[in-house]
Structure formats: C-alpha cells, structure tokens
Length: 343
Image 1 (tube, rainbow, N blue to C red):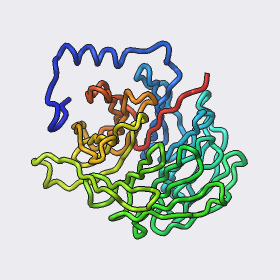
Image 2: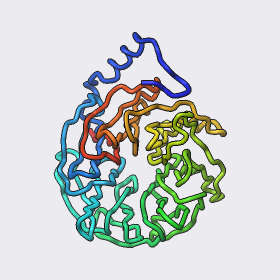
Image 3: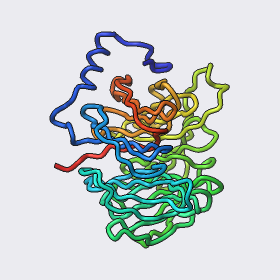
C-alpha cells in the first residue's frame, strides 16, 4: 500500500510486524467494540469485531439499509431503510447484544444519514420529501418534520446533544442549526460555497467541516460567526487530475488531530492535520476502488473505510497510514459506525 506524495514504501520487516500486531485478536477487547456496516443495495448489515477484524454477524434488516447511528451507551442501534420500491422508508431499533429488531417505524421516503443525540433520546432522519423527521426514540413517535428545502441528506449531532446540524442537498447550499431542547427549531444557518454533502463537526463545536459539490476537498466554517473561514483542496496526482471525481465521506479522528476525506472516483483517502491552522495534507492513501464513507475506532488507532466499489471495508492503521486488512461485506457498503458495548 503506498501513500501518495508522502510515503512510497517502508521497511518490510517493520510493516510485517505492524500488520501482524494490528490484526491479532485482543482478548481483552474481543466482543466489546463492534463495527456496523450498512450494505446500501442489499438487505443486511455486517457486524465486525474490531479486536479480531472478523465478521461476527449478518443482520437481515430489510431493503436498502442506509443511515446508522447509536447513542454513547450503545443500548440501541438505529438504522434507516431507504426501501426504493415503496413510498415510505423505515426507522429500526436494533438490540446490539441480541441483534433483534425491537421496533420498526414508518418514516419519510428514502431516508439517508440520520443522527441521534448522545443519550439516544432524539433521532433526526433526512428524507426525500424535503423534511428532516424528528423522532422521540423512547416513545417511538414522530414529533416534528423540519422543512429545509432541497433534499435532506446528512445529519450531525453536537457532543452535548443540544444541537443538530442538517446538511440538505440542492439549492439551500447551507447547513441549518437546530436547537434540540427548544422545540427542534432552526436557530441558525451556515452558508457554504456550493451544494453541501457529508459534514464533520469538531468535538468542541467550534468548527464545521463540509464537503461541497465541485470541490475536491472541503470547506471549514467558524460556527460562532456562521462563516466559512477556509477552503481546503486535496492534492490530486497529475495523472488523475483530468478524471472527474467528487468527495463523499468526511470524519474527524476521535483524538481531534486529523480529518480524513474520501475522494470517490480517484480512489483516494486524503488526510489533513486539523491542529495546524493551514490544514496541511499529511498523507493520501490510494484505495483499491471507489470509497464512500469512513469512521474510526474510539482510541483513534484504526480507520474503517467503506470501499463501495469492491464491497469491502478497508482497515487502516492511523499511525503508520498503512492498510492492514480488507474485510468482505455486502452489496455496496456505505455508512459505518463503531459502537462500544457496555460491560
């Protein structure tokens, strides 16, 4: 595996040791941290034990599972089904210990990436009807539908659970900020340079990172001023610059040191230092096919990249920036999430 422009090789012995260690089962963690992957063109979700890198379960949920979210204590996993052939989508409550579907709720058409508050009380689901559906997860009822204009697509919750950040596709070209406790009202907007795509939110809720159409990179906004402060462009190798691409999949490492960005058609994951005010690109990882989404282990040691073009999850060591494993999953994996099961 080569790192474009930065790392073209490493000592074979060192790599071998690192790879062996990375994929070695850790008995202390086995069965505790689980990577859930939605297979967006199938009817199932793959569950992978982070400690071993092995698939431990296929959960059959229904047609076209797309969005996924879970509260901090992982007492439930929320999954949204797009269900292309019928007019309504579904929100599922899945028990992560038994893999039993506890409840199903009809929601708007073709739901995409949802988010829940850290306590699991509220779930926001972007649907094709132009609304974000707000669900009281405890009472399992729809309490509000927020009209954003455009096509609701992605959602982020603040770490304290007080606000939701809504990123709809289309004409709005802005992110809406919702006050969760104040009746789920829109209290602010952040305009961006083009149609907004996947977002990422800093843990201190000071910066909002946003993919936008037409930019191989991302924009950074200061949340307090509601203004874009930086436009960050990825370094694309000369032999790929004539090939059209887009960015889809943006995530900040839990330790808040780097942001990783999926460059879909160029098959690259770009890595930027977010502790530096210039956001320099520190690595670029060439993938085996089209990439679409990513997440991290809670300790920031590993990244899990959905390689939708190959129906695999790519596991990357965050320190060495080396691929340690590819894991076979289902039909067109998209969203993914690591949960930590309670003791």
